[in-house]
Image (tube, rainbow, N blue to C red; front, side, top):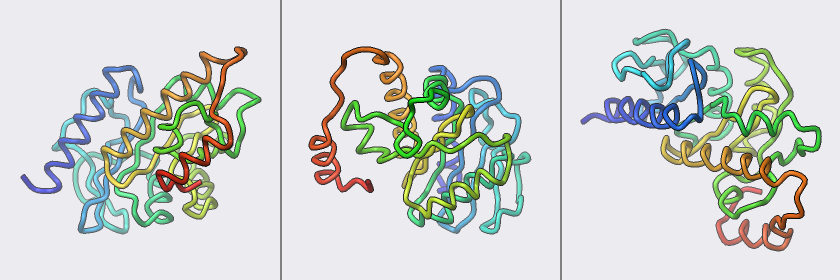
Length: 214
């Protein structure tokens, strides 16, 4: 099995799993993977992540020219911003997952660190998650906002829209995305309660032990 064939199948397998578990719905969400030759595989525009066809995944050249497959997602500028600013990025996942979107709309959400420190895994897999302002879907300004972070964040939360996560490969990006959504869910469940988040000292211990970019 070639690298591209395996990546196409993994994209569809992961996307279907996310769709089946309600992490994305309808024709929302998109995934991209960078291949070793510098080209990209990207989920098509207007497609449901629950019903992707490996043969119809968009294939883009290193300079983002459409080579084959269906027309790619309109969020290409958002994805390319992560690849261009984080050299070790191998995949990007963007969802409209409900709890993350809800968290993005709460006035108390910290724009510099949108996820409260509730578990070590949210810190280990995501670092700090930057809350970006609202942009129209497909607006190239989203990509520019990510570029403005200079590669310092592997994940962002688009206000009233959804999370975007970059990882070293597709599985790492998918696992980090799911951790983001689960942490957002916990934050909403605990809102208004007298819960115990991780202390600053505990957060720093996690950062040091797992070499987190904090």
